[in-house]
Length: 365
Image (cartoon, rainbow, N blue to C red; front, side):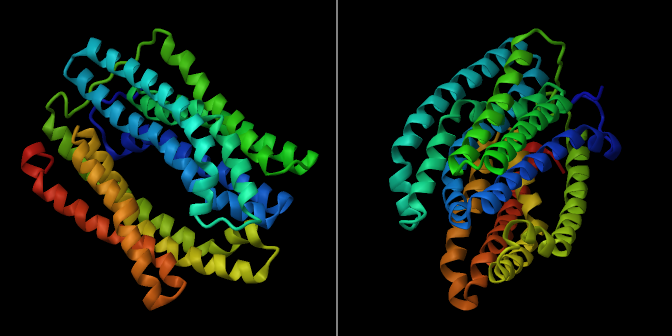
């Protein structure tokens, strides 16, 4: 078994991270399956409604990722400093607090879904589907938050393969129920949300049994252990791997833009042309995206939440808003698709500046 305290070569790093990579890919795939069934078995209006309201739903789920990413880094650092009791107490607090927030999000989300959908520009035809889908999804807020939280802690527990297994179980549950509810029975958009919630229950509850039992997971985090040589080695190897995947994913996205678009909107040629063009433009952002995500996560791992939050905030909000407001004036509708790439390009400049400014403090190069 590979431990976080081990020396990581490129081979061992890929072996250790491969389950997590596959977990993220699988999560994206079963998210696509939701869209496939809604678009092909329920209707294009419902598909558009779900896409419109989805970012609002994901904001609440992202809280679990925040607690998981930041919390797992903090727990790992404490374990690396041999403060095991404090690490366990921190982990327990995060689980309880995230669960409580899940309940708050459930009631809050249900209450404000309709005005939010209207603010996002939902038409009269789309509004009821936005509200119906989101309100059912919010019923699963607690397991949704916990699922995202535990995915990060499986890595801290040196069990990334278990995180992958749980994600696959949740995804398969979602897929099967999507096919049953919409493809076989013929239910509406609410059934897609119900399938998602049931899958989240699987993904959020199973890890509870693992972490509630005594296990022999032992973690040492190189920053907490003040192992600067290994920290430098890890940073170099990670950047090389991120670059490799960035180039590969960009190439694959450009090659398969048309067939992937056909899965969702192949029934409408005009819509297919628009989607394919958007896909080609959006795919350029993959060149920069991985470095920005890694940069934010890296500073989280260094227990510098301020810089991590700054990179994420500027990348996902400030730069994107500026790009969306300005680029369409010069490039028309293509400016909307270019906005993400422009935001990622601006973010990588910020990430580089932050990395250079803090290199002496953390001694990572």
